[in-house]
Length: 224
Image (cartoon, rainbow, N blue to C red):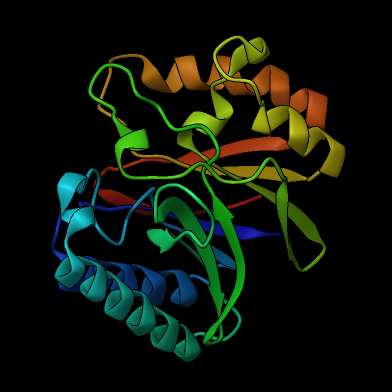
């Protein structure tokens, strides 16, 4: 049985040190609850949305330092996988950063994934700062469970109508047992039901159970 802690915390934009402290405390609780996986929100390290702070070299240096501190902290709980949202350097053409997640375990980065679909509507303007990730599925093996990974908008391209690629459909080829999508979006009444109605049919197409984490103020552990 896979045990997951969903760490919906009050991440603060620009407070790298504070966000690191919040995540380490949540990971400690997750380890005490014998969780296999602790899941943090989209851009949890920086808070969402850092905006033009992403253009500041000093801010990016603090991001790198914060990620290094989390990597060191993960050594304290060697059996726990951490899914952390953070801006990562992009080595290709275009924007120099990607909206990404990293999986930490026992002091090592064991997986990286960059958000493919970058929203530019309503209050969102992610293409201003980020390059899209490649059209590939990333799956993390935790014990005997295959965990597919996405970030927010990647799971909302219903029917392929809004973007040229559909990351959720790509995961169908990998056939994970569980899909974890880290999110950070504005609070909306009935959003939980809307998200479930949107993801459940696609979960059946991948034979996976859906799971998501967004910004909030709680941490909970549940078996899968």
